[in-house]
Image 1: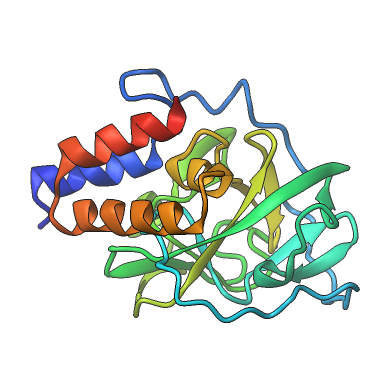
Image 2: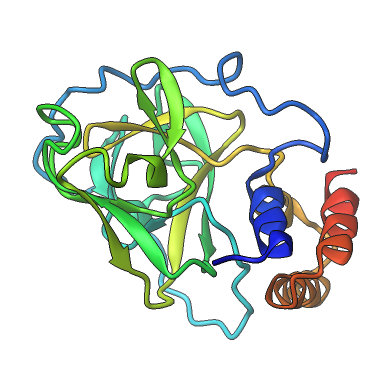
Amino acid sequence: MRSPDEIKLQSMMRMPYAPGEKDDLKPIIRFGGPAVTPVPTLTTTLPTPPTTTTNAPIPISNICFPKNTVITTDQGTLFIENIIPNYHTIDARRIVAVTKTVSMDKYLVCFEKDAIRLNYPSRKTTMSKDHKILYKGKWIESYKFLGKFRNVRATEYSGETLYNVLMDEHYAMNVNGLMCETLHPDNVISQLHKCTLGKEYKNNLITTMNDCMLKNDCASYKMIAQRLLY
């Protein structure tokens, strides 16, 4: 069972605004297409994203997808890790970045094909337990579907890199037919991406924030998050 401090930190990572402000998805989410539209065959889109090797630390987060998750863009469907910022778009809106994170969670949530209804999703889809999807007009964290749908299950998380899509606004994207939230521009991970104070400073910041997470140091994490926001 998670400690109260760990629960608080997990909540802070999800929080898109400054602590204490209301997180209301409805006014800022717009929809990227019908939720039940089947995802077409994977397409190959050029240019291809560059392959880079880096020893930079990877931040801890809790709203993301594993590699090879299929995203629908205006240019076609492709794996999330192959999305090229400022080239691929969703509803003619630019994709600012594809973020890379790891999670402290021990499991991800797997939705088998048709788990919720026909073609929702259109193929097996896995995501972090706090990622929200659209269901009956409401945005609901994926873990809340566990135990309520036969073909929604927890699957072990082994520490691999996870990905999310950052846009200029909080938006919705088609993920194998599921309508899922994009990363909020005010989320801590979004702010880390926007940090312009140099790689060394950014890497030290990520290392410090990860240490806060591992030590359940809520106060220090909150202080860093607020500095990034303001």
